[in-house]
Each structure stands twice: as structure tokens, then as C-alpha cells.
Length: 122
Image (cartoon, rainbow, N blue to C red; front, side):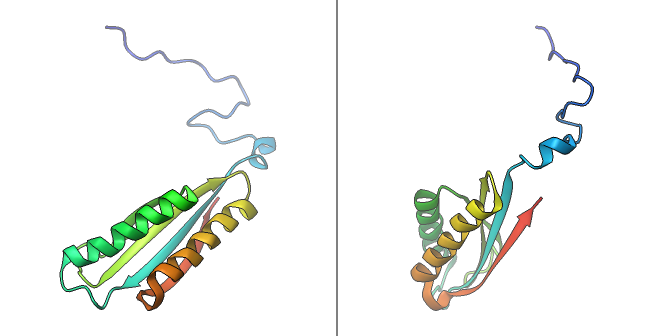
């Protein structure tokens, strides 16, 4: 069975391991990360917490087409940190999506949403 085929990257082109050319940087996508910290006072078990987190993740995924994952506090039954990530052609569009997702999370969670932060990966 033949191994993977390696193709040379033309000089000046952005390859997987190469840095993008200066003119390509303006055309690069924006990546936004919305981090939501939750305090679920009514949860008395990990099962109770999973119900709230799973519902939030499913709603954000379906309504806003974002990637969502619980990223911290998985073993604590009254706390959770959930991140939603989007990739868009520009920062304003990514910001609109994540601000709408934050608003929806706030409506769904009410006082259980402790904080929300928006970060950019450039």
C-alpha cells in the first residue's frame, strides 16, 4: 500500500506549515469564542446538571450553528463552563452570532448564567 503523497508548496504560498502571505491575512476568517460560566443551584446531581448543559448545548447548536462544548467543571454538579465557537468571514459577523447566542443563553438560563466573555483568536 503506497504511503501519503507529499506535494511541494510553491514559493510564497501559504501551506499547512507555512505562515500566510501578507495579502492573505486580510482575507482570513475570524474565530470567536463565547465562554459561559453557569451556577446551577437546583442541581443535586451530575444528572441534573447534564440535563441543563445538554439542553443549552443543543439549543445553541441548532439555532446559531456554533460548536459548543463543556470545557471545565465537568465533575462539579452545580457549576459548568461552556464554550461556543464560530468561524466567520469577518469579526462583525462572528460577533453578531455570538452576541445572539449569549442573549439566548441568558434567556434560557436566567440567574444561572454567572458570566459571559467573548474572545477572539487571530
